[in-house]
Each structure stands twice: as C-alpha cells, then as structure tokens.
Image 1 (tube, rainbow, N blue to C red):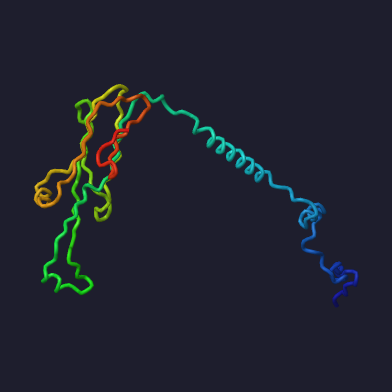
Image 2 (cartoon, rainbow, N blue to C red; image 1 turned 30 degrees about the vertical axis):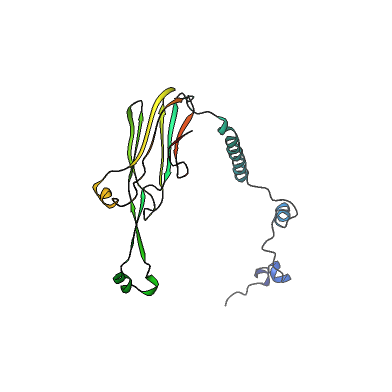
Length: 221
C-alpha cells in the first residue's frame, strides 16, 4: 500500500497564483533605467555615437575652411609666358542651295506640301591655320556642329608664346575640293578670314583673335 504524501509536500503556490497579478514584463531592477525609459531623465548616449558626431564636426569644419582658403592659394610656378587664343563662331560653313520646283513636281505632291521652292543645306569644312613668326603652329579642319550640320562652327584654340613681340598670322578658309567648287559655281563665294600683324605678348596675359558673325573678320583684343 502506497504511502500518502503529506500536504506539506505540495509545491508552494507562487505569488502569482495567490494574488492573480503577474509582475510587469517591463519592470527593471534599476529605477534610473526605468526613469530614462519613460522620459524622466535623458538617456545617456553611446560613446561611439558621440565620437562619430565629433568626427563629422571636425571634417565639416575642415571642408569649409578649404573652400575659403584654397581660392587664394597659388598653385605651381608663376606664369611666365604669354598666350594667344583664337576664338571663332561663324555659320560661314553652311551653304543653302535653293531651286524652284517644276509643275510636274508640284502635281505629284500633296496639297499641303506644295512649296514652290525647295532648299537643301550643305556643310563645307573650314581650315584653321595659325603661324607664329613664320612657323606653322596650327593646321586643323573644322565643321559645323549639330545633328544636321546646321549649327555654327565653334573653335577655341590657345597657344603659349614667350613674352615679346611676335608676327602672328591667322587664316580661316573653306577647304578647296572639287565637289565644293562644282556645287558652288553659281553660288556666292564662301568667305575667307585672315589676320596678320605684329603682336606684343606679356607674361600672364592672353591676347584674343576673335571671329564672330558680328565682326565679320578677326579682331585682336
């Protein structure tokens, strides 16, 4: 016959069973942590986070100082040479050919397309030659820009020269080809531009030879 266990051997009921109330899961043994969690006191920041903020502040200050100081710093050796810059912007290389349509051509076209005159554009390359004291320094070909070649020819070319007086000759002229000569037989002659003169160059100063639609020839500045 089995022995009956005494009542005292039963496990004691937990405080939860007796009271029916469970302790809060967010309860903490540290009151200061509880106050920090609920906003009574500020939460202490992590040391690593503070360090990152300090680094950001230092780097930002250094970059700001660089923006202020660097424009005033002179890099490299002082300029000892003069310079000639050739600047060109012209539509001289764009030639428009126009002709009248015949009656037969007009009849074959839709009514809204019956323009009596039809025009086409031809792009003629131009050559830039620059001579300094009789020596050829530049000889290059340029064409009108744009998808259809209907934009102006734009050139920007800079040459360095020793200070002093130099004989400068700049020419900008259409490339001479049989195709161009034949097609332009009945058209106006394409313009040629030239500048030849003695120019005094000073150290650190840029002299400009400018050609635009307004000037219609090279202008020395």
